[in-house]
Amino acid sequence: MNRAISGTLLFAAVAVLATLVLSWFSYRGVRAALEDSFQRRISNVAGAAASQISPQDIADARALGEEATGYANLEVQLTALRATTGLANASLFDSARTVIFDCRGPEYQHEPTRLDTLAPGEVREALAGRAVVTRAFRLGSDSYRAGLAPVLNAGGRVAGVVAVEGREDHRPVLARFRRGLGLTALVIALAVAVLAALRIRVGLAAERLERRLARAENLAAMGRLTATLAHEIKNPLAIIRGSAQRLGKLEPQAERMAGFIIEETDRLSRTVGRYLQFARAGEGAGEAAAVAGESGDAAAALRATLDLLDDEFRMRKVAVGRSDLDGDAPVALDFESLKQVFLNLILNALEAMPEGGRLDLSRSERGGRFEFAIRDTGVGLAPEISGRVGDAFVTTKAQGSGLGLFLTRRLVQSSGGDLEIRGAPGRGTTCIVRLPRRRG
Image (cartoon, rainbow, N blue to C red):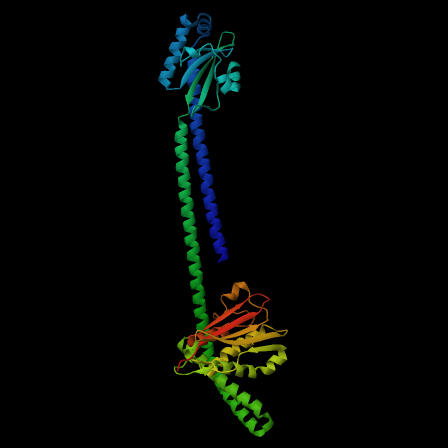
């Protein structure tokens, strides 16, 4: 599932990145088209105006001023040009960069053209005989460009330069397009993010469902196997019990060991019966074992379990600490089920300490509930499994099934109690059995 989530996130990231890249290229393309159209327009206007102005008119206006016929021709040509094209200004300056005519008014004449400051490089190119469009420059809050077209005399020398200035009216349009494109990209990114989140959520739900189905199938298979094993085990158990009884009679010194064999054979027989009920009813073994009205002494069951495992502790080199295990602890769970609970938990603790260690057991009572703590100094629990220990088929053992703790938890829950298991790698494991005190 982690691979599917990574794939979904990667796809979402690629989709968002592709959207941003396409949006950027779209904006660049539209901006380039608008700017190219604007530059061609003012370049054509400037070139058309320059073709209608003669070098003689420029020389006449420069020599005689506003009274000259050439000046009148310049005024007519450039004023009409500005009016018909809607450009911001039209002017003409000579080779010395001095303005001969400016549509803004006579007060701007006989002064150096302002374009010599705003676009000096382009002015030099125009005076060298090349038509050119300046780079953008700002006047007030608006952006402008100027088209420069030289007027050549008969010798090919530049007599003057026509300059037409136009405000870049496409800038607001471009800004609106950019905002719209950004909003569209944002909506697409959000849609991709929502779809990715839904895909991940559906995938996680499907994974949970798949785990539940697999668990149900495993339980069903285990139920069928349990029914078969239970049937096959009951007959050998009867033979073992009968043989132990005869052994106790024949060898008086073996009476104590024979008693243990008989007791554990009976307990195993009852456990097999519980498993068989579990297999047939499809319910947890705890519910099958919790017969109404049955009760037991949890403290006595724990002491009996410790006595049973006394030799096992010595063999495994495990030191046992006991705290407040004396007295009784009446609970609504039968004695055999209590022994099964404690036996499963203690055996798990022993298996977690293959090189020996320490096992501490304690009892306390809080709010009408007995708490039995079983602490070992074993290998502990990995973080990825600590929250799932006690679920069916979840185990830390290479050859385990996970059903031991699962059935133990169900037994405890059947009496209204709960089982808490916590631990950390290398710091041991603590199991706390909480059972409510039996009333009456």
